[in-house]
Length: 394
Image (cartoon, rainbow, N blue to C red; front, side, top):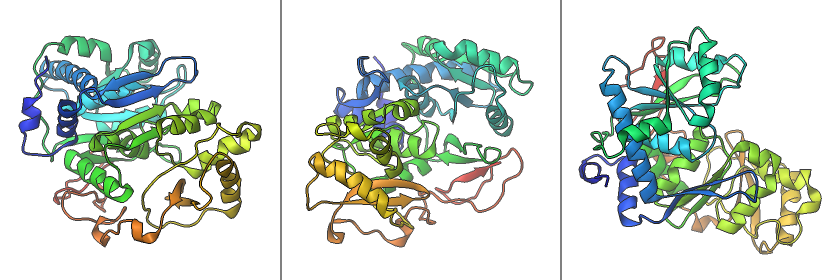
């Protein structure tokens, strides 16, 4: 059985330590559930204990891989579709002190300029994917002069190599957890270095701002390589000891009511008003009694918020009221950094207030997240010298 004691005994509080702590206290509690596109298909699930063991095996296999190649940088480019396999690999990278680089899956048979730019900028030499996508990824790598020299490994093979092995040394707060890159839709991808201390501070702020706890249930369709999808939707429930139900973005786009029904069934928290409006506008005949949840809650505050168009409020309010939303409950549609969120608004006295140094986007005290504010040397990491700050990666 995997020994989690070294991670629990480390003086630094990290997300990995919290995962093992929750796995010890509530091993059978649901950590992740992946909602498939077809409603007749079974939902894949991972308890906290299963997640810790699976990620630990992957981490041990990754440690052996880098031990045999000491000249290789401890980085792994994770090319996975949405699913539990990505989550196991990502947590395994955190445990193995290997810098994870989540990226969107390249399309088979087409150029992959985004992946090329990320690989060139980061200097990564290892690509990890799952068995089903291995042949397609191998073709993409072979067709690119930039990517042809990268090593490709299968997650199941690494996990099998690490089964029964001891876990690597636990990460510290100053170790780099992952590189978060922009999508590259408007310019070449730009990345920031997120350390374990940065990640934990960000999750702490989210928990304070959104009043989450172990009873929270998150339901998300956001991409796993997106910063809000990864940090806010997939990692934050583990910080709180809660559960997360996730689905592929394509599942939501094809069957948007699937997301709302999952929120209703799991009593989960939802977001993105523009996407909440989508199933009501695209399929107006489907929002009859029982098809929409009686309540959607995203308890939190946002900075620089502005009210969404009134027509969106009217579009969403009617169907939700018909499905049981209390008459006295005000449904507020707010915008957050260009993306919208929906919540049941409570009185101002019930919402927590935060000092300026804890607000989203602000420069905060050591241990929190802030941008370095200067350009780094090409292909390098800028050392800001301030504990807790995110370093730019150009």
